[in-house]
Image 1 (tube, rainbow, N blue to C red):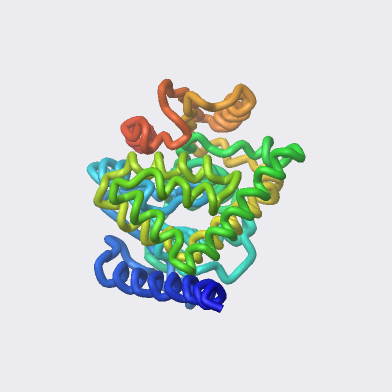
Image 2: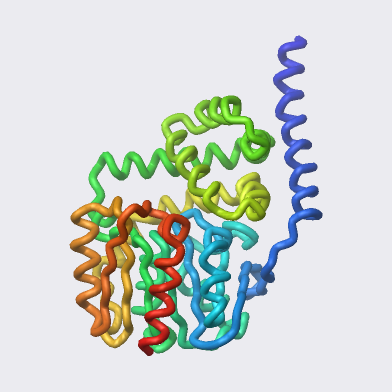
Length: 331
C-alpha cells in the first residue's frame, strides 16, 4: 500500500512543481518582443534596429527567436531585423492547422502583415528554416528581395530518405512526445534546473533515462544552447519546460519528409539574390545541391566556412551578419 501511495504521489508532486515553476517563469521572464494577434492566434515577434529592407530570421526545426540572440543585435546596427517563434515554439501559441509547407509559410506571411512589417524582405533561414524561406520566396516572390540560407536542410536527402533515416526521424518524434509527457510532470524542469546550476552527472542520467537513443541529440542541443549569451538561458529553459514545445517539435519533425518532397521542385525567381553559407560539416551531396541552388539565381553565392558546425549563427555569427550586409549593399 505505501508503494502504491508513493507511485500516485510522485506524479502529483511533479505536476504541482511544474505548475509553480511555470507561474514563476511567467512573472520573472519578460519577452523582449510582442505577441501579435494573427486571426485569433498569438505569435511572438521581436524586432530591433531601423532601416530598410527589413530582415526576417527563420530558425531551425525546433529553434526559436532566441537562437538569433547573437546575430540579431549586430544586423540591427544597419537595418531593421525581426526574429519570431513559429507556431507552438517559444512564446507562440500552438498551431491550429496541419504542419504543411503551405500552412507554415502562410503563417509567416500573416504574422508579417498583422505586424505591418513593410515588404520586400530579406529572408534568412537556418537549416529547416532555409527550406521555409525558399518556399516563401517561390510563393510570394514580390515580397522577397533576397535570401540567405544558413546551412540549409537538404530537400533531396529528406525527400528520398532511406528507411534508416526515416526510422531515426521517427525516434526523434517519439522522443519529443515522451518529452512532452515528462515536461507536464516537472522532470524536464528539474533536469534543466540542475544543468544550469552547474550539475552534470544527475541531469545526464535523467536525460539518458528519459530520451533513450535520443540522449546524444539532446546533449548536443544543450551544448549549442551554451554558446548563446547566458542571459537567454533561463528563457530557453522556460520554453523547453513546456509540453507544447515538445509537441511542436514532434509535429515539425514529422512533417519534414513531406515538406522536403514539396520543396524539391521549387525554383525561386532568378532575379532574387541568394547567398548560401555551408558549415564545414556539410556533406558532398549537400554542397552539390547548394551549388545548384546558387546557380539558379542571377546573383547566387555559395560560401563554405571552415571550423563551423551546423549552427553557423552561433559558431560564426559574423559570417551571417556579413552575408546579410553584403546582400543589402548589392541591392
